[in-house]
Figure 1: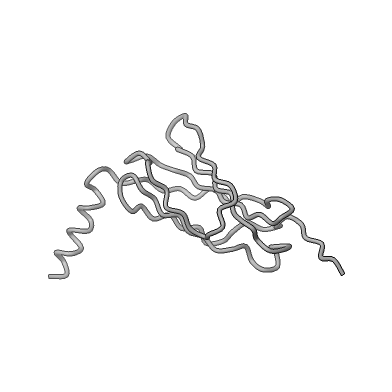
Figure 2: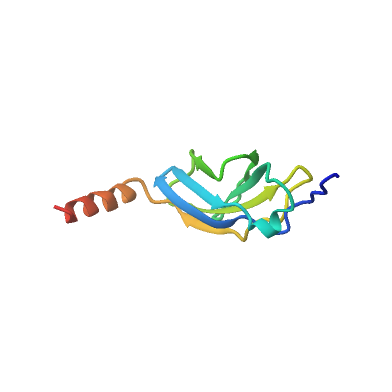
Length: 120
């Protein structure tokens, strides 16, 4: 008996973007729902673009984890992330774009300091 896999018919779920610094972004997501995987997921394709001007997209292929730490971004720029899951046959649909604006240099650290002072 052979198994017939196909590309995922649904995108990954619960995309979360969390700036870690003005230049670093943590991206995490969940696998597509089981009913839309259509076979074992062998990786993910990420498309990261700068929404505020012309830029080449950062495209990662066949990432096996469900998270990525992206460095070398620009402070105070808005980035859009789209993710697709792939089986051995190919990749399925991308998620709708999820946006985040990176903090300015010093802005994120101000939030942490204020939060820490409020706990005193």
